[in-house]
Length: 240
Image 1 (cartoon, helix red, strand yellow):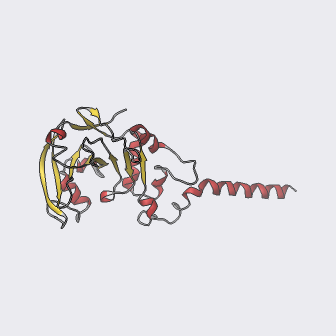
Image 2: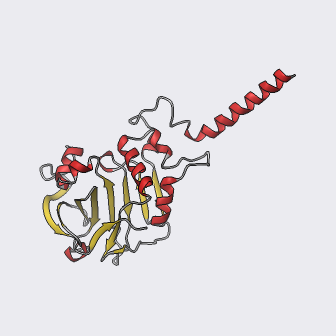
Image 3: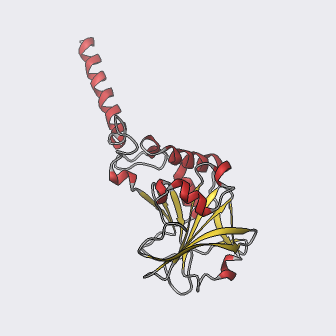
């Protein structure tokens, strides 16, 4: 009788363990970083506020139908793990400021104010901020941590991109969709940077990259609207 009871208990324990691991069953085993299923590698997390985003980085999942930012570390790259661990250790991530005040978000129904891309440009995780734009355009400010901050923070954006992705658009690699690509000295609120500016033939928004401490920053905007004066008010800091 005891043997039967022990057998039943063992079966129940196994079933419980299986249930608890079910949501990550497609992430473990022999899945490599490169072979992660597309829906996982291309995952995005959307937030209404900065505070919601920071909390989400530290959450451990209890919903078997989903996974958390932390749990994706088992299949994503080393750069992803470093990114997530840094946010959780500091309980913060740099936030864009205008005139030393946090940006005003777009707060548009059906759209997020902040999006975390698990794997995006140059194969790195990026956080996109969507500020309010008076003229209604879809502009954004996105940032990622430099993979080698001690080395890369002393390089221009053009040099960093050349090292991260040699075939990507750059001053020496103009694509058919590009109007012009060039380096430009730009003044921010607290410093001057060497920005990589990419102009497009059929798109009013430019891509403006620059290095800011241990960050690679991309500002996607129409430079006639977010002008030199706007950039001179821009800075980045960690806000509680």
